[in-house]
Image (cartoon, rainbow, N blue to C red):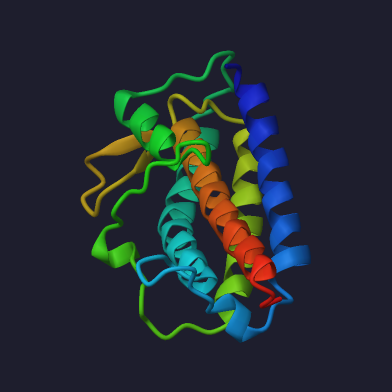
Length: 189
């Protein structure tokens, strides 16, 4: 896939996700946001807290990667490369992948008290991610690296990280939409 094609698709997908959140989810009352379709399933607020935790961790790292790539004058490339770890994370985050995965404790907000401000936090984080995507159009997505762990030793390419985060957001927004449909079907909305 070309760098331009990938970034244009990610921009479009993220804008659509933001539109869904703003028009369908943000105006729900807190009881609807706390609706749980099953005891083991996350509610809407827990989904958004989970997404926010990832975005808040990786956006500063991606901003730094873009800044360094610009300073080093790494110009955009034609083809985006995928690392084996990048492929694995992207596959797991894909909304079309119906397999459920266990989340690390740090990213699991199940049964924690959360407020409606979590949804607003997502829109702010998604806007920041959108700015990173736009800035990334000027750099080499394969050379720019984003640290995964605390040590920064393990890295993803900027392209793999951007795709993973956008798909991850879409996956959980689709989960929220499914819960909203269940609520409507049960006459709760």
